[in-house]
Length: 119
Image (cartoon, rainbow, N blue to C red):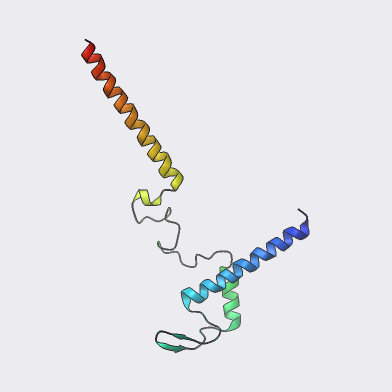
């Protein structure tokens, strides 16, 4: 890949993330450059165009604007039980380990009674 395609791809992703950040700011915070109707009536623009674009460029690389436990990664949150915080791969490994342990216990239990019945 030459430098021109790398640069164009980087610019494309930057514009894409900037567009997504602008959409998120409009939806979450009601930021608007033009006034709009809201459930309680007409709202004036909440910020100037320069403020909006500065905020968009700030949040372009990190859309997690808030750091509450509902918005951030559940693995780092102290709320909820352990099973809600583990990944799907960890759940599968845990289930596989549990199944293997159950089979081992059943096998040992069955062989213990087989040895006792032979005596």
